[in-house]
Length: 464
Figure 1 (tube, rainbow, N blue to C red):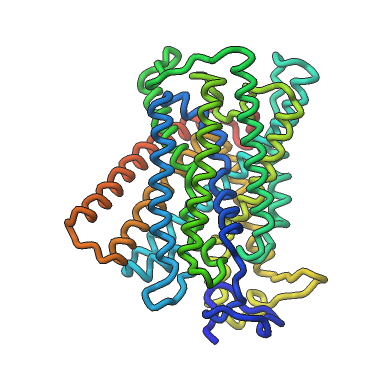
Figure 2: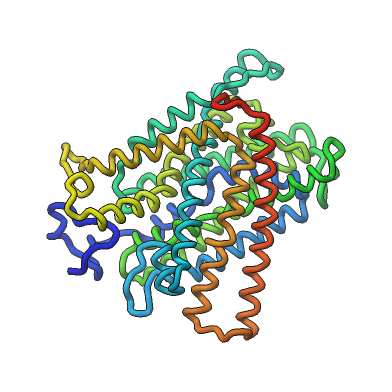
């Protein structure tokens, strides 16, 4: 039996049916993979799209929503072909796929980009979930005291509540145990997106259309320099909204051996990005029609919507539930990387390897301590830097080019043996360079916004 690289066989598993690599037979399907993708994609990114269109206008905003969807779909379908090496061996992680196909030290750069991004996204989801939970309290305060009341809410208690739940969920051992959580999270994303669309329609149907712009909206309330920085930040937000390449290979590793994993994953990718784009277009466009050029940064917690308060509460509750699952989809590759590395380095350590049975649960002391420490540390960072739009833009700008574009294209060029300076080679490289430029300007805008936010904030005293 081939030695496992990803997960150790637990007691009693040896008698079960195994896959070609000696691991317990995978049971994932296009449905579970699609749920994982939707959970990872339709996250906090959808909440900022209305603000993005308010910075970009109808034409450029709609174009970027579509073009980023097409680019992400195309490069992710290329990435699905990297799960199996030419010899048929599996690549369990994105980093391993890069090492197999590109060699050299590129897998190290991939690991730095991937895990830095996943850690950043987990922090971003923690921020967003706490804002949504705080918005429920604010909504009820507005109902009781009126819309003119500030009703500002300290986010720290909700950050701690979210972290407490994640401490428990983080003990789920691996991706193979997350299907139920991803399906629930995907349903929640559809529910709050639908509520947001319904509230947007009701708003502009009842009070007329807000002021919008075909081109980039003129900004009399800010300098042209500040306006440009906001545009760069909006581009980063849109890029972030389609990011899931950093967990694609790990999701693909949950699929059944037959039909071929790459074909099933391509189907799941098409379904996931199509569904996400459909909701993004509706949420973004309808939200922009409702709020116009003065759209809030988060269209469900920025309180352009007040009534019916109970429906706003349901939407924000669904966001929090969705992000509980999305957090796990995002952090499982981080957990797996550290734990597999530790097993290889200390194969005889009982602390690292021994599993203890407690009823239906299996506890590993290293997993318990390390994962708990991770959740606590990311929560502390979220409490220190709770800046929604700028944080999403920074994550998007650092994710989009290296993981969604560069590595998939480079691996495809090697796999397909595309001749240097051929027409196809030039087109692929041109696409990569264009996306690199987009990432650079988006990173510049988000860093500038983060710096400005840090200068005006109080440590651990974030309010909604």
